[in-house]
Length: 274
Image (cartoon, rainbow, N blue to C red; front, side, top):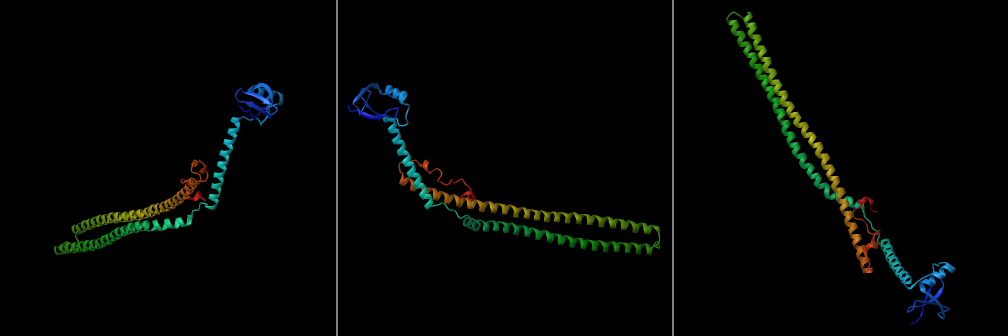
């Protein structure tokens, strides 16, 4: 069997007989009478170890590693050129304009529907307040007339009986006045209670309107931001899909791990994509 040339542990040229594992020097002419391991040990002790030492196994590993590194370099160069020629772009302003046009009309309609209903309720309450005040005015006039008529009738009766200036007449008229004041006070208390209830309902409508405007404004802003993010993710996925498919066609037997660092993560918020 032909001798195999190799570099020993000291970095010197030697020849190996694979059948006997014997080492030769002088271009294979001189038998060292050493096996390969013993020869390497002898050379290391005599000359020191050399980084040039190699074996068929290490030569194969070096070639394999070089081939892998070359493939990685080709893939990296391809991806660098691809991203330079096809940079990822996302027009945030245009996405916001599109999302705004989509969601603002919807939330504007929701708010207007609520305001229309609220205004209808407010009009009804104000009409009830007006009616309550009219009834109060009417009842006060009616009570005043009835009281005046009663006092006049009583006074006439006492006058006819010759008791107009009597203490009995004064007492009776006084009692009538007290009763009138009590009735008037009770009516006014009922009026104030009813009016307070109407005003509370108006305040409640106003508070509800303020809260609804606030809540719908927040929901609208969230919807717009969500719309922008959706459009950003769509653009990201389209870009990544194009890159992945182009890469796969160029390197069909390679894994997609080389795409790490080039693929745009779809979990990133639009404002962090550039």
